[in-house]
Image (cartoon, rainbow, N blue to C red; front, side, top):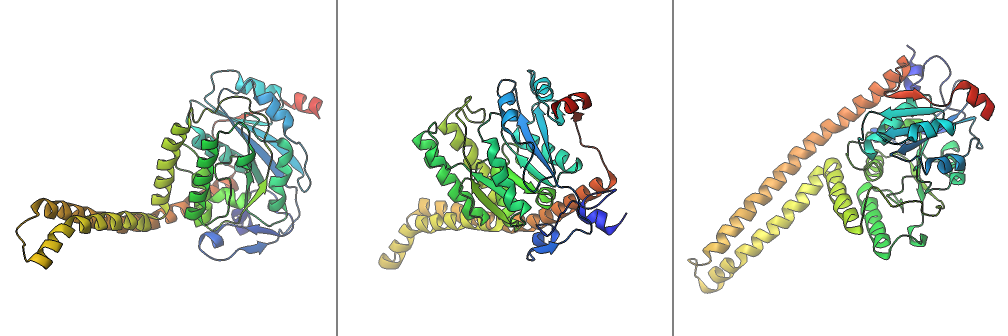
Length: 378
């Protein structure tokens, strides 16, 4: 197997890079700056648009009809539907609408798992660029061109669509405020400048997709951004439009549910990628509380010479001090484990490249439209 095949994650043909392209692979992951790699042979650039679905037979036709089948700088556009255990005719409708590929999960595994399964399939199907969109037709298909343009130009590895949340009419004021707050927190944690952190309308080049590993069980949007920031992936954003609302959100049934699900998710993700800072900050807060608990005893002892009272304050302060030391210790342990996570992720990326070079088939894969229907559609 040639080094070129392993470097590109392809087998049996030219690498999937046309012209200069900025890659965010191992060098960026190791902390080095981006490098420019030029393909040995020019070849076609394939875009696969993946659509995670759960019981979307009603909205899927409009979503597919709105998506482009040709774009500047892209030689081939294909559609992939990820069926996350639907109980309706989602898969049948997808085939009737002419999708090229289907990933059919046996049961409902959640949005993050569906996204990861689709991303893996797109890579194994030879995608050079992957776009993720929602099945409820929330995002305008015409804006796919905006998403992929910075990637085709070699200016970004990952592009996020900014919905301009403040201008969306069907978002309540509280939801808009929480979206802004959440995006600000993610920007601080990730070091990126993405305005709309929860937008699911995103594009990835092949190298960024190869590195991405989402382990959160609920959503991929926040973790993938924080992960991209920590891995120094070149992240960009473009303004996009949204279509009229077609149905209620299935992820959150209320603003309170949005807070209950996203706030712990952000904390878990940050603790996973910055454990020492997270636990040290918590330990410092608890240590400050311990000092406050000891303060009455210290004041009485220093100014009055009385060291016999305030037993409860001493006990409380001691308990808090022990808790603070434990949090600091957990931060050190977490930092050591974070190093192991980085090594594991590097191994995962290399295993992916080997699988692609060997031509391993996508999991849960089924063909989309038949050849006859494809010919008639074209």
